[in-house]
View (cartoon, rainbow, N blue to C red):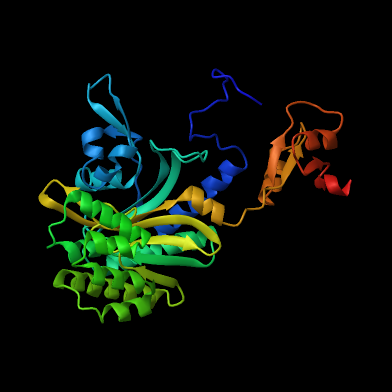
Amino acid sequence: MTYSNSHPALLPTGLADVLPPAAAAQAAASARAMAVFQREGYEHAEPPMLEFEDSFLAGAGDSLTRETFRMMDPQSQRMLALRSDMTPQMARLASTRLASAPRPLRLCYAGSVLRVSGGGSARDRQLRQAGAELFGSRAAEADAEIVLLAVAALDAIGIDDISVDLNVPRMAGDLTADLGLSPATKAALMTALDRKDTAEMRRLAPAAADMLIALTNIGGPAEDALKAAEAIALPEAAAERLKRLAEITALIRADAPNLALTIDFVEHRGFDYHTGVAFSLFAAGHDRELGHGGRYRAPALDRDNGEPAVGFSLFMDAVEAAAPKPEPPVRVYTPTGMSAEDRQKVQALGYVTVRALGPDADSAAAAAALNCAAYWRGDDVIFLKDE
């Protein structure tokens, strides 16, 4: 069907309605993730969709400038930002409303974000996130806790064969810090690293190319990658990052000995504001990234260099695509005059009840018309397939 520009069902590019039963499945997946976060001591916070632009785009939000819708607030005459990610909002809460809360501060969230770019997929611009952030600790145990929490949430949603790819986004910067590269050359080098383009690495940073290429080539299973990296004569800053990565890896492995754990030492894509070890989440048989996270500096009113923080976001659209499809609930048509007690008995069996809004001559036909698999007759549930 071709819609005119004024058709009421028409939506902006990149936005889509979520219809039943998909909406219920999405809500259930988010609820399972949030239950895992909360049982591990992460408290639910609910920030607004709109914030003042200058506060939202500070710190971790700076990398989101091009992805954020902005508008003028007619009341305050200040620019507002429509959230394009929820991590900056958690960081704002931690540094302001919760600045005096005990540390480490653990927060979790779930909600929708909207981004400027679209691509063509119906939901590219409207995304659902669920995640957790830990503020106020530099300990490697905090990094490991966050990784394990993300894996536990995916497991609770029903996703099997989860893998975690650990990254060190600042490693390349350590290796090229003294080369005097221009900002444009640095950006081109990061692109070359993400593409594993060794020829371009040699062209852009010949003095560091051997180490960069060596780190690129040894990426893979965590323990093998770490052992290979220890044989490379890294400068002090990079060696310290490697030591930290090894510590976090050992902590993760202690709790999850069978978790598929890999390392990519030079991956940078998607980790613009991360300052330490970062990670991406995947599941066997699915190409899309299920989430990512890592260590960063959250703005803090009482310190110039911010507050140590680590966290992650799950991309719930990708998560739901990787999760097993839930069985739809059995709908039971309940005729006029059915008692509340009987209706509660039916619901206690795990069925969904759909009420008649008036007398009907044929309950079976009415049930079929309303996509019910059964109806109530006398004192029993009668399934249409058994009629």
